[in-house]
Length: 171
Image (cartoon, rainbow, N blue to C red):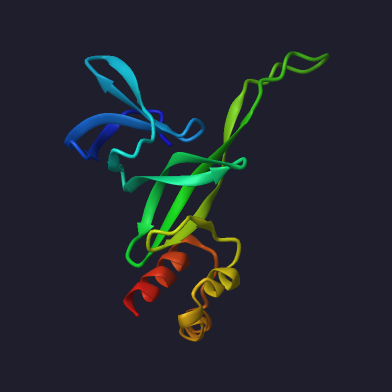
């Protein structure tokens, strides 16, 4: 997310750690933090309640990846009866060796679109594949949500998803 270490606050079950120099490694899904010029790794764990880093609040959640449940860091976008989260994503292109008439190409990371997920109360995380499918998850309030989506011209953009979840939580 950033090459440089920035000040972050880490909220855990054991207390709050303030002004910790940190950076988030999207590819590996962990935070790196410095303590006395030594860099350590903060893996996602259930004892971490929240990490406030830059303009983001990261929370630890269980999600399915490759058929297995694993812990990961997610950006908290909206909370209430329904929680909206974003998963930061990058892809890595391996370095390419020198070829005839071409220079070698170094490996590089490419930012991918964020993945958006929601959870109803304490249920499982569900990826948002479309607004229509998301609304189907709320049978008792489908009509109000459909009206809101049409009236506000809601799409799968982050700010629209936040509006939709905040609206749902206000009902």
